[in-house]
Length: 136
Image (cartoon, rainbow, N blue to C red; front, side, top):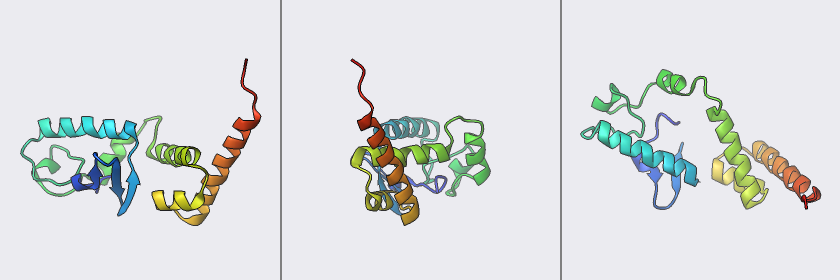
């Protein structure tokens, strides 16, 4: 889904991103990363007609998305994998907005069982934090 992102899937003003047809909130860190990438993209390929967010030297002269292998190679070896980032973002949302599985399912487009699992994990973390006394 990442390689298929188009420029019109990004709504920086409203802090929204649409991934796989599901609009989602855009956190500030991701927003800043997108702004930096868009600046780079604009300076590197100013005349491209490719509507996709991610470009390579090859796809800048086409209208197709980057290849699956390019995305895989771009994140290979990183400590912060896409899977870890996705999980962290979902857990952060549950901790910030409250551990409601319906909210998580709607925001991330995940199934009920996964949403319940994240909500339970957030509930446990919140409960543990509430029970732990703060240092003087």
